Image 1 (cartoon, rainbow, N blue to C red):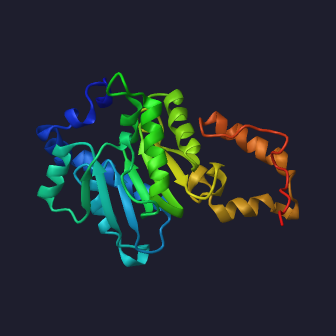
Image 2 (image 1 turned 60 degrees about the horizontal axis):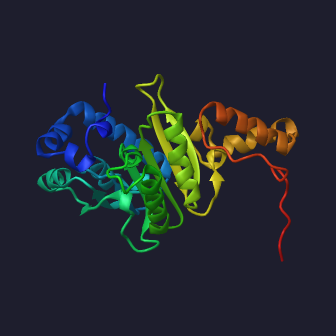
Length: 272
């Protein structure tokens, strides 16, 4: 079966009939809701925040952001951006609470630096892996997107991008683009089987390289549990060996891993 992004550019693929059909499909609504809740859990927001929704479409994810109860840190205010005018028109018909902008994420994120506390993107980033003209390239589109997203987030902010990579090569291309833009990045895969798996790219501003081991909820390990494991029975394992073993495990799962060097696991000197 052909992937939608291989058929037409998103602004053409999501025309008026397709946008309305997509939004009214109960199966898509349930999947979208599940992935948005997962993204929110990974964002780990503890208070009402301003969130950017990249590829917001008809506002299915945004409606969930607006409905987060106070005891879970909400409700959140959100701004959506999408390349499909038809999708945004459906969002207006649905009278969603967020503000929306017609924009191509592959050309950047057109907001002032530090505008947002967090960002999500559900089922959109894979569209950036296709060049829409002979003067563009997938790496170039990803570079502009992640650099713009990085600038738009406040320091300490986090973004979660759920996407459907075609293969491991594309998965690595997306992750590498995020790291080159300055993000700390980690990949999480939910579900079993090729068709059911959901890939989440978790990004932080203020960290660098792979962050899988320090983000609660990733790799099935809670942060506090991770710390406790390191000190089990009062013994502290060799830090370098532990890091290398963890890297091998993550590489086997196709996750982002920084190169091992002579400095891996070495305690940094405090600079005065």
